[in-house]
Image (cartoon, rainbow, N blue to C red):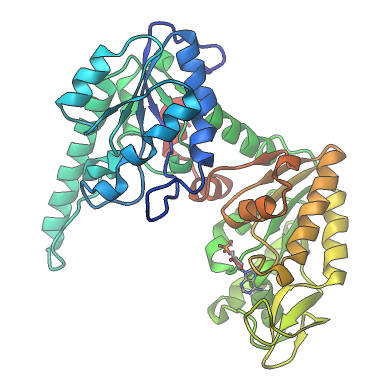
Length: 420
Ligand code: AMP
């Protein structure tokens, strides 16, 4: 397989799929350009070698052509970060895209309009009537799959090399993220730096694991994390359960949780996960105390109590000091650490202490040589809020893609290039 470092792009025309799905305010200003910055090293490498780039991305979830989701909004920022003027094609499939990509010279860049203006990108039919029959739905699905292939073929025709640097969409089998790779031979398709770094980080954690390996799973609900927890129970030495899902476990074990968040239909599941941890010899670490509040507010009255003795009218919004110590001790004695999800409602400063303590323990472990991977939405927001992102070994840019990767699923965007 080709690697970006070893590939010389001189004279090559590269279709690069990036994830420039950045948040915009109501005036279409970019409020966080992290995703654009993340792909710049790959773009600069290609251009620096003397290649040219045709950049494809989605933005938002348009239902068709919609100026609100036009990539024109982000064109100036891309030019600024790349340090060269970037041209724009108003339609990713039309004549303009064909002509402009054909005319590209070494060192030049072209941005295509939002790939998701076409349903074919996702390969899912749009606008089907609610009362469509099963046959109609199946026919529409088949037609859209054919359109998807045609779109992938057309995008591929612009270029001599395909580079995928869109880890955020690696779990989707879309025209530009996976199907397009079929139109390039093994020597002309490769991962960009971001994609390679993400894959390396996850594989270092899950495959080449230095032990002890500790995963910290937080967040609000156990139901959204079942598959990950089950996969991790076959891999980790310690599994720390934190955040809102704590209380489903506490209640399942007979504790009193007051008004804390709880999924009553997942009590049996919690018990089965506890049993599975025992069967697999995994040290399951649960909170022993909680910081409770008399309302869901930063200004609520608070107290610290045992996690299984929360009075009615109160709810656990973070871990308590005893739990902080227990978690920190496990974390600091680990060699591999995966953190997904806060220990409490970290958006409220008064309930961010537990997440901060976990973050600082990970920093200390990392300083002692552990490999720490942080990812999946809110834990990234946490490390950013606490200003400790640069003290982690790796902070993932992927949300759903990272979670599916950790669940042990094959990601279409990765498989399309390396075959697994
Ligand atoms: P998730 O998206 O599942 O990772 O959940 C993250 C969210 O869980 C954050 O917005 C937290 O505020 C929330 N959360 C964490 N702990 C609690 C808790 N004890 N009660 C309610 N929400 C919580």
